[in-house]
Image 1 (cartoon, rainbow, N blue to C red):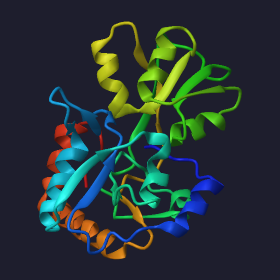
Image 2 (image 1 turned 180 degrees about the horizontal axis):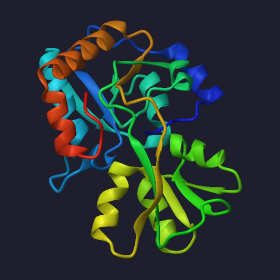
Image 3 (image 1 turned 180 degrees about the vertical axis):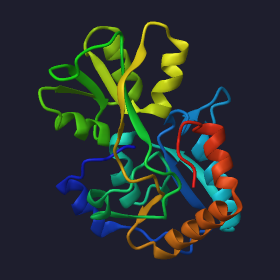
Image 4 (image 1 turned 45 degrees about the vertical axis):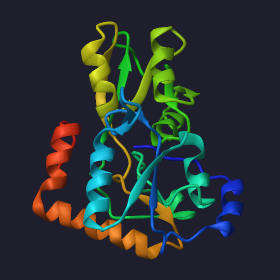
Length: 241
């Protein structure tokens, strides 16, 4: 899914990491703007696949958890600086991120990305929008002949296609498919793209106990089938375990 580009500023903050072990409340940081993984519902609460998953993981790990929302571009720095204790926000496990934070075991398989456009186009030479600092943006940047146009939010990247600023957008298929199904103006084009290594919870490198608790809870959900039930409910086109 998403791939934050790490900076020297983030590395500098790493030395100030706070310990999550021993906290009476574990704070879960999410974006709240990436349905169906996470979004804010009409009641103003975090909802979606990761809300249900996070609540169940906390129950199995016997943790008291609170939800915190944070913009995507600063979600890792604010974890490292102690504003919350874990990230559960559609974040792909990557070697680049592992230089700064640690991850639980993955709770999704690598998910397909897709292109959405107003009509069929030749992607080579096209202007392609993507949310900034994601694995999709990195993929477009490596596409021969394509021009990357980055936006702060996934909704802005879709809007860029509809207003003619970009020819197509590349994002998680689970995010784009409902848009294509509900808006006759746009449609999915081309072949799916498999990038990323699955999603996990991000934690500070010092918080090995918290990481292991979440991994054990994820493993128990895989073993009894409840994780697959959530994937089928919220991410019906995604692979199960």
